[in-house]
Length: 410
Picture 1: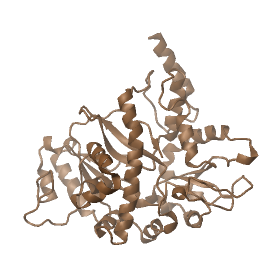
Picture 2 (picture 1 turned 90 degrees about the horizontal axis):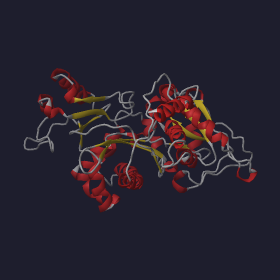
Picture 3 (picture 1 turned 60 degrees about the vertical axis):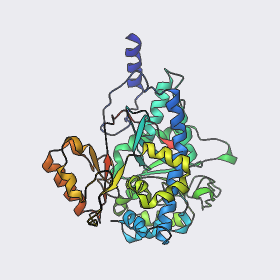
Picture 4 (picture 1 turned 90 degrees about the vertical axis):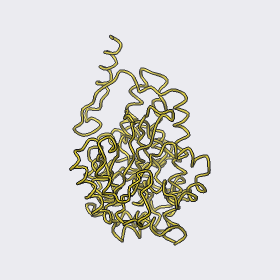
């Protein structure tokens, strides 16, 4: 007990004065979350599977735009987004760009498969927090996954030349952890002139404009543009920590986007709102797209992802033919789901994306936790707003939430 008390005291003392998340308190554990070797091996393989999945998502959208896959794919993914943003996301200059940090939100399950993926977040909070946790707990345990510096090494590889972490007021809760992260990365900057890197900064998105780098020579980022070089005029690369629905609140964004399109700066995650939709899990399960997924993912990855991606539906209010039913629910109309018993309402409603309700668990409703009238009201609202803000439904079953697991880098 004394050892545990000493650890808890050391952990409290290790907290940055500014905290990690604004106005948040913490329940502390003297021990790190245990992961056995089998599960660790599974997680290490999951990273590449999800990279291939996101690459396939990017490909499917572009093929849909070109008419080489069903047009309704792009129509669903573009719903509610301004035309100017849609056009920018389709620019050939960023065609192959993918998010370089993702956080699959894993839920551990009692089933033999071990976990499911609730969703994939490509603008994830927790990067600085996880780095701090790794450093802090490594002082007690030498077997921390990634070691003391795994998260710092991973994030530094995202923008090897350093850059600006651009964060909006909407995401200000996460600013303290990003300040901690930038400070640690700056402590690692090399004095070697031949490999000099820019200073990491955390800056407000609302006032942001492309910023000239401290490094005197023009930069090139070999990790940018999907493998293509980004040659600039000495501007800071950008890690985007704001949601794309928030763009109207960022007056200087047009200059930043123009610099990105001209190859002067690298932005990650890329300006591709279609990649940030939760509906990808529903599209993954649609039978008309099955052969696309099988071909692009490969048979092995396709089967593996079927095991961990929960069955999901798009709440499209389009009437079905009289002989058709919604698969696995065996209902003809979504309003029939409003009549399900509490036991049968082990279902989640989620706003798919591009909305203040699309992040931070704000637009999630669990049917079994709601009174019948409230559940019915939320289904009606999802159907009424589908064209401007699509909602998905996910099967929950008896999955049991546990603490979040590490972020994955590509």
